[in-house]
Each structure stands twice: as C-alpha cells, then as structure tokens.
Amino acid sequence: MVQRNSVFANLDWVSILLWMVMIGFGWMNIYSANIMEADGGVFDLSQRFGKQLIWIGASLLLAMLMLVLDAKFYFYFSYLLYLVMLGVLLGVLVFGKEIHGAKSWFVIGGFQLQPSEFAKLITALALANLLTSHNYNIRKFWHLVKAFAIIAAPPMLILLQPDLGSALVYSAFILVLFREGFSTNIMMMLATLGLLFFTTLLLDKALILLFMVIISLIIYMVVARSFKKGVVNGLLVAIVFGVLYGTDYLLKTEFSPFLMGLAALIPVALVITVKGFWLREYVQMKILTGLFISIVFIISVDFAMKNVLKPHQQHRIYVTLGIEDDPQGVGYNVNQSKIAIGSGGFSGKGYLKGTQTKLHFVPEQSTDFIFCTVGEEWGFLGTTFVILLYVGFFLRMIFLAERQRSSFSRIFGYGFISVMLLHFIVNIGMTIGLLPVIGIPLPFFSYGGSSLWTFTMFLFIFLRLDASRLEYIR
Image 1 (cartoon, rainbow, N blue to C red):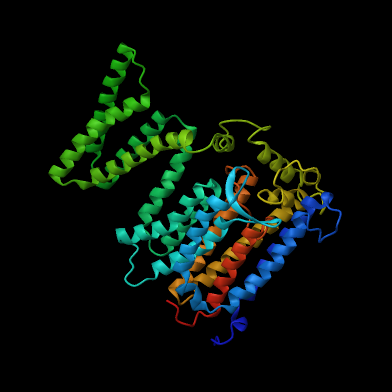
Image 2 (cartoon, rainbow, N blue to C red; image 1 turned 30 degrees about the vertical axis):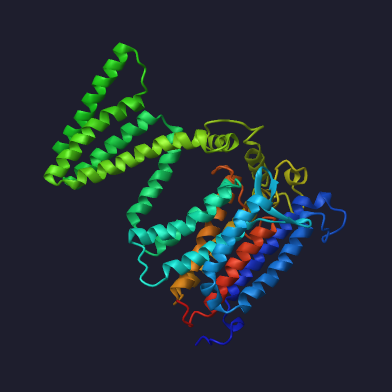
C-alpha cells in the first residue's frame, strides 16, 4: 500500500531516470555542437554547454522545490499564478529584449529567460483547475468557451511579441479537452480543417470545391439514403455553374472557376435550406453547414497567408510543401540539416566527429536543430534511440496519468503530455523537412534554460501529484 507521508518513497523513479538520460544525452550533443569554440574546458561559461550545465544544476534545485511543495498548492494557487503569468507576458512586451525579431526575452546578466515557455505550465494548471471545478461540464457551450479562453489568452499575448511558434504550441491543449470528453465530431472537424489547410496550398481552390461538393453529396446519399435527391442536387449545381461559365466566356469577364462554383452553389443551397426547414429534413442543412464552414476556411487560408504570416513564414511553409525551392535562402537550415542527418549513415561518424556540426553548416544546431547533431554523429542508431527514449517516456506519462484518482492530477498530466508531444513531433518533423520550421526546442534536449526549466517543473509537479495520488485534491 502506498504511504501518504513519504513523497520520495512514492516517486516514480523510472520517469526520473528517463529524464536524466534525456538531459545527459542532450548536453553531450550540445557540447559536441560547440566544442571547437571552447578554450576553457567543460565549464567554460562563455559557451553554450557551460551555460547549459548551470541550467541543469538549477533544474535539479527546481525539481526538489516542486517535490517539497504540498500537492494542494498547485491546485489552490493555479488561478493566481495564471493571472501573474499574464502580467509577465504583458511586461515582456514593454521591458523585454528583442532577439531575432521577437520581443520575447528578459535578459538578466548573461542569461535569457523566455516567459512564454513557463506560461505553458501555468496554463495547464489553470485549465486543470477549471475542468475540475464544481458542476463544470465540457459539453456545455459556455463552459467550453471558458476553457478556450484560458487556453487562448497566453498565445494572444505571445503573438504580439511576435512568436508564432510558441503560440502554436497551445493548440496541444485540444488533446486534453478531448481526453476529458470534448466532442469527437468537433475533433474530426478540426483535423479535417488542418488537412484542408495544406490541401488549399497545394491544389487549385476550384478543384478542392468540386471535391467537397462531391463528398457532401455522397455523405448525404449515405446518411439520408436518398440517391435520387443527391443526384438532383448535384445536377442543379452543375447546371447553374454551366450557365455562369458560359456567360463568363461570352462576356469575357474572366471570373475565377472558384468564384463561379461558389456562386452556383449558393442559390442551390438556399433552395435546399428552405425546403429542409419546410419538410424538417435537417440532415441536408447540417451537411451544407459543414460545406460552407470548409469554404470559409479555404478563403481564410489565403487571407492568413498573405496578411497574417510574415514573408519568411510563408516561404517556410511553401518550401516544406515543395511549392518553392530555396536551398540557399529560407530552405537553407532544413537542407543542411537533412544533409547532416543523411551523412551519419547507419552508425554515425562518431561522437565529436561531425563535420557538418563542427563547421556550423546548420544554424541553431544546439537549439532548434539539435536532432541533426544526433543524426550526423550517432547515425540511424542514435536517432532511433532518441525517438524510442521519448516514446518510452510518453508511454510512462500516460500510464501515470491514467492511474490518478484526482481529476486535477490526471488533467494536468495530460496537459504535460500534450505540450511535450507537440514539441517532440514538430521539432523532429521540421529537422527532417516534414514540417515547416517554427522554432521550438526539443524538450530536455535542446540548449536553453527556459525550456529545460519549464519541462522539468512540468514533470516534477506531475510526479509530486502522482506521489500523493491517494490524497484528495479534486
């Protein structure tokens, strides 16, 4: 039986061992990526590996502090910490230092702190508190709005810095809501919109609209079991489109096929809607609603790409999707990263022997692109080891989360898992060219105190809650 009065006796030491391995192996690769510049040994504080030792030592102290604090502290003070965190995010916009075009950092001495990293942790605490509050029901609209408000406030402030990569991380909390009963249909819709985003960039909008109309008709025929009505509706859209296309050709107005398709769809949709209300056939209206949400989303993708994202962010997405080829410009980092990883072969060139790493062909090779250092020096075996190490860690965290008796502890655990999983997927994905470069670190591995401290606190707060899982928290 687990004893309530012994936190350290009840700690999950398997998780701590995995944490130590990730930090240790990460530091080895940070050292390798910067060794040629060093002249003061391992503890050279002018180099990143020397500073990382300071961050690691401080993270050990933070881990102890997280364990010493009472488990209920994290519940009772979560809202207060959240408000303080919002104040700090506002403060960095005024007093922060601009680095790489983003005002995201407080500089203290020779060290930098990024508040947006710690905001993820505190948001997870506040969200766990909300979802476990009295009479809270995630399936009620206004209750769900409260959850989204807590999730959305920090990234809105982070976007003002601007730091798009850190802001996107907060989308990971959708997985927490899903675990706690968020609608599966809405999750499927969000996944569909994500797929539609990339499809919109790759294919002509008129072709996408045609596919969506066909799919909507098929869904209607299957759900309503009415092949005849589906064919009639499709023919109506085709006839109206044909008339519009012929008129455009004769008048030489040169409207785009997408606009003509949309114009053909609207009158038919209005007829179907009126008829649906009259005959109480709500299936058609639900399908039409989904179709028009998708159409609005397609239009918004174009607007966002041209008016929200910066040119270099647009080009990164285009290069990743193969729409553009810029190996000496925007695509340079990824191109050199893939060369470094590929040159490592099966077993790597050997520790401290990576030429791409030593000659600094890959920018940010000890932070966002640390994985390419592993690939070059440790090869396929090393990268596989790192991936399996993270997979094992995630599985362990899921096991711990599912054994919690406290809903607060379980939700916070899944908040930790979700944020770290997104970091893991995006960081490695952008390193090997599968995802656009958005500049987020590999947890416990990349150089940087803010990231290391945040994920260490995330882990040890969760381990503290797990050690007290027999106590009532909420």
